[in-house]
Length: 150
Image (cartoon, rainbow, N blue to C red; front, side, top):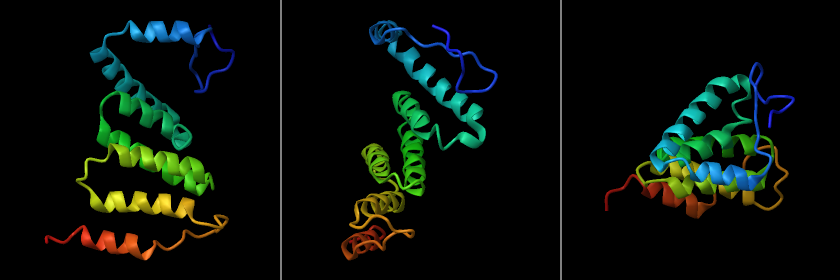
């Protein structure tokens, strides 16, 4: 069904009338094509979103994840978590950061540490601060140990 107004200027947008129809259609697409289509959709949204890219960050991250591009998806989830923190949407920031951490392959300890700080800051008591909290001593100690070769 054609939407009266599109999310993106100059585009026509369609939606399924019922979720079951959407699901049957999605399931009929071959898996290898799904990955390619999800990647193409992520690229298209990124290109079209312009100054509104933060608004579409989680959508882009989800498509990259479904495309099998876990590193790019993790980075997109990290950016979405940072944006949520800027908007004081702490529960959303935690959800996005945890999604990014779940996709982490362990090759970027500093990146992982920064995400862990996002979670820690978002879960800190009295969350109505204007500045992020300092990381707890245990987290800072663990981050320093990432570079050691014991």
